Image (tube, rainbow, N blue to C red; front, side, top):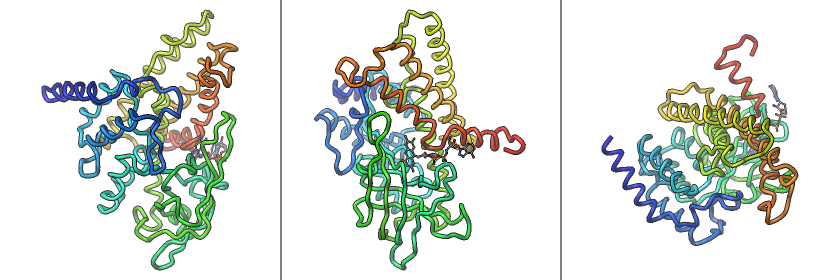
Length: 388
Ligand SMILES: Cc1cc2nc3c(=O)[nH]c(=O)nc-3n(C[C@H](O)[C@H](O)[C@H](O)COP(=O)(O)OP(=O)(O)OC[C@H]3O[C@@H](n4cnc5c(N)ncnc54)[C@H](O)[C@@H]3O)c2cc1C
């Protein structure tokens, strides 16, 4: 306990000295996040300084082992770091699918060589990753995927198409599910990593209702992938894919707490919105109560998940609750904002932040597996309902 208190005071002092004032400003839009990668342009010196300082201490991934670029912190120390960052409103130094999705899968299924090669680069924000799971005919039924990887002796030859690949046009590398056998549905899938600059990879952005274009169709045309870039065993990639999805769902569930855009901390909506309408005020108060309950549940499940004690289907429960909560939050922001909240493109409305976030939140209950699919998983694996 005394150790934890001295860790807290050292951490507080270091953060005070090293977190630039600009990096303590609330995040206004996705543009304020630092995604890293070989083509990344830092928004400011402060953003670069903050990433480099945190990465040097391993604090972009505080609970990863030190030998892989992490901070080697215990769960209790990681929690203290999170609290101290929240105390000064520090932005996350790095937002990365490498941290929230691929890294945990590599830690569990990667070879020692893969861990030593990829993890430190992820921790320093040097590779920006995208996720090649969904295909035009394989979304909820992901195991129906058809993108094919043929064994050509010294390499895999990949052909096929992915869809809804978030930031594929900005990513350096992809973690990709491919079919290496047609003998069994789940049993014929492998998990490959490859560079998006490899000849034969191309992307085409898809425009969304929010006015942004954050994801793409991704095409593979005779893409050669070195043999060693497979994670786990050939035809056993489904296990890696499912494990990664658990982490992805946990990350998306965090939206219910305001996500990284909210500084990772639950913020009372009642403190931000003061509509005159008593019914709306009551709905906001009810939301705040549910958000507090969700935050408590999230903390408990995260601790259990890290200790390997959580039910394997618990991320589905969290994902469902967190994303439905986030959609509710956005509906309330829109209702309380009245006609002002419909402003799309002015300085006053911060570039239409409210309606754009409201529209973006609709995707939360689709990405990473839809709400219906999460409910099916909960019904079958947790509630053990007949016929589920
Ligand atoms: C914002 C966003 C970002 C995304 N980013 C990525 C990414 O980076 N990489 C990637 O690979 N994918 C990504 N996706 C794709 C996402 O994983 C899929 O959209 C999702 O899995 C659903 O698949 P689908 O769109 O094909 O819908 P479908 O599977 O066709 O589902 C259509 C509807 O049918 C319902 N449904 C389907 N099956 C069942 C069932 N068994 N029981 C009850 N209802 C069912 C669904 O709930 C849904 O309402 C992203 C999606 C969004 C919205």
